[in-house]
Image (cartoon, rainbow, N blue to C red; front, side, top):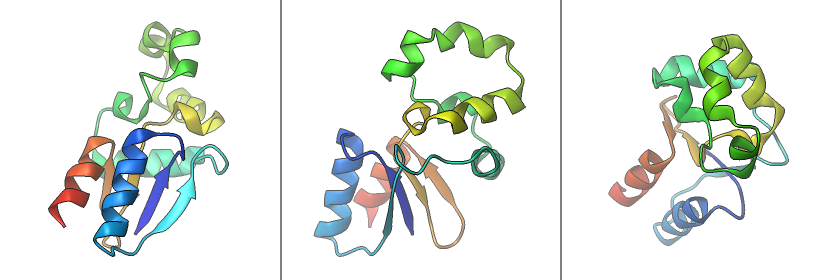
Length: 116
């Protein structure tokens, strides 16, 4: 499994602790250092079938400072993928890519970890 997180994110820390306590093996990817690419985001979005807004860190500083809540309405899906790929801190986290290819985002990762 691949866990994509930000070291300072409390939800990420919670998931990591659960995985460690339960001896669940995973690889870690630091989202602020290793940004997801446009292609990765597009692939994750298509596999999850979630609304693209679920991939945005709507409580983050960058999202708020750039007034993205209003700007996203007029952007194409491709432009949203491009935007998300510009800065890992714009992306909702944690993201878990399970060995079977299933992708979980945000609180769904916590639910998965707690259920193991």
